[in-house]
Image (cartoon, rainbow, N blue to C red; front, side, top):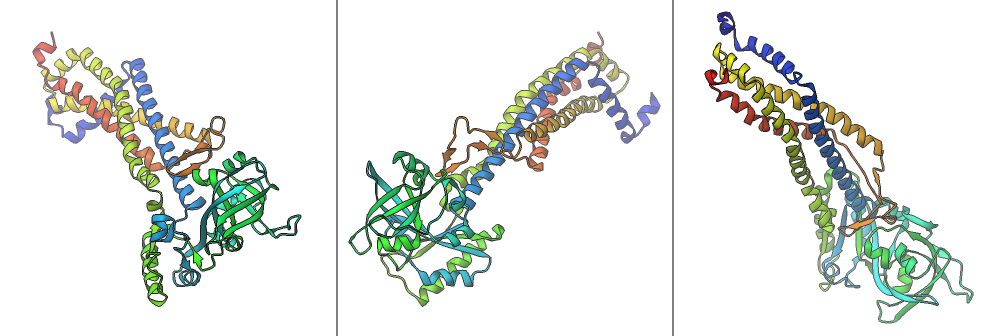
Length: 438
C-alpha cells in the first residue's frame, strides 16, 4: 500500500479510469436506463437543431433566391408612400451593372389597379418585370403552379385589340375563378392622369410566394406596364443578386458610392428622395431576427431538455454513492485521497455521458436522415405552405444537420451531466471513514 502511495498521479489515473468504467456496469440495468434517458434527450436536441437550421436555410433561400434578392434599391419616397413617380432612370441600370462586378440586376415597376371579369372584380397589385433579367436575380418565374409562364404578347382579342399575357397569384386566381386561358381586364390611373385599361390573357398561376402577392398579385411584362401606365421614365425597384454572398456588405457599400456618383452626373428630382440601398436582412427584418435568435433558442431548448434528462443520471449516481458508502469508507480508511475519490465518481458520470453522446448522435443522425432532403412533410394540412415574416414557405420543414450542431449538443450534454454529478461526488468527499464503515 505504501508503494501505491508513492506512485505518481499519472500512474494512478489509468487505474481510476479502469475502476470507474467497471463501476458503471456493476448495475447494468440502471446504467442502461440512464444512458437511454440521456441519449433520448440528445436525440430530441439534435432533431430540434436540425429543424431550426433547416428552417433558417429555407427562410434565407426564400428571401434571397425566390423573391426579394440579396439587395434592393428604391427611392425614399417610394419606400415611404409607394409614390408612383419616385423612379430611378433607366440609364442607372446599365451603369450599375457595368461598374460593379459580380452582380446581376433586375428592374421592377409597381402600381395598383382594379381587376375585373364578367362575374367579379377586386383590387390588385401590379408588378412588372423583365423576364430575362429577373431569371438572373431570382427564381420567382420558376414558381409556376399551372399554365406556362409567358409574359409576351398574346393573340389579339376578338375585337382586334392587342393583348398581353399575365401571371397571377394563386389565391387571386381562386377568388376570381381564373385559370390559364382566362381573360382579365385591368383598370388603373395612369401616370399622366388618364384612366389606363386593357384586356389581358392569364398565362399561368404562381405558387404562393408572398401573402400580399398571392392574394392580389398580377405579374406582367415591363412593356405591357408602360403601355398601361404611360410611365416610361424609369423603374421603382432594382433587385440585385450578388454572386459571392460573402461580399454582400462590400457590394452594398460600393452600390451606395456608385449611386452618389450617378446622382452627381445625372441629378434626380427632389420629390422622389435619394436612392436607398437595403440588403435582404433589412428588407425582411423578421427573418433576420429569427436568424440571429436561432442559435440562442436552440441552446435554451437543448439546455432544458438535457437538464431534465440528466435528472435520471443524478438519481443513478446518488443511488450508486449511497450503496457504496461502506466501500468508500474503507478506501478513505486505507489512505485514499478524497480528491481521487471525487475524481472517480466524476469519471463514472463522464463515461455515462460519453456513451450516451455516442448513442444519441448515432440515433439522432439516423432519424434526421430518415426524413430525407424535404424533411417533415406538412402538405396534408398546409397544401399551400405557410407564411411567416412576410414570406410564404413550402409545406415542409426541411431538416439540415450541421456537424457543429452535433458537437455542440454533445458537449452541452456532457457539461450538464458533469455539473449534475457534482452533488453525489461532493457527498463522497464529506464522508467520515468511521461512520461510513458502520
